[in-house]
Amino acid sequence: MILIISLLVITLIIIILFSFPQLSPVPYFPTNKKDLPLIVKALGLKNNQTVLDLGAGDGIVIFEAAKKAYKRKLNTKFVAVEINPVLILIMNIRYLFHPNRKNIKIVFGDIFKMNYKKLLTSNFSLLTFYLYISPWFLERVIPNLKFKISNFSIVSYMYPVKSLKSKEKIICGKNKIFVYN
Image 1 (spheres, helix red, strand yellow):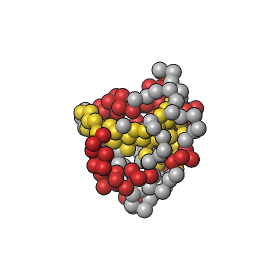
Image 2: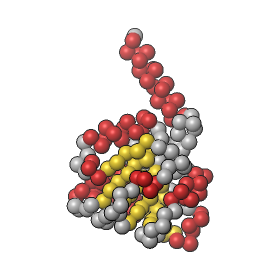
Image 3: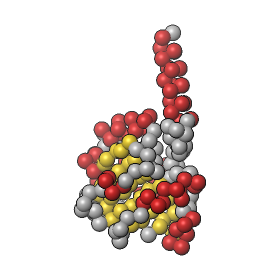
């Protein structure tokens, strides 16, 4: 009986964490695994690159990209930013068993209020933002991403960034992947 009550309480806590916009304003929808290879390719992994996954969810994209960079022996840094504590916990567990964990950083934070410059190392030459957030939040986060560096790109899964339409390249998989350089 105690086990059943404990499971119900845990389930209720998880439902609350995923249901209230104050705890996570962007709903969690997992990335389609069939699109992962295309997403990783769209990130254009290179040496001295930093990839920031904003609203990283369970970290599937960051961990897959980090695995690919590890196999290719690239010095690529990965930063996953998430506000949902349950998803942060899931990512931290995955982090413990990842072969490239020295190049992965998990950050608990609000993507709309964060100073991204503080997350970057001084030796990056290419910066890539990965976004899989609701279309009504995309335009809200874009102004925070503007840095005074020359090599800057955005990869958006499923939803286009309307203000960057002129720089758009589309990759079609199960869902569309939008790349902006």
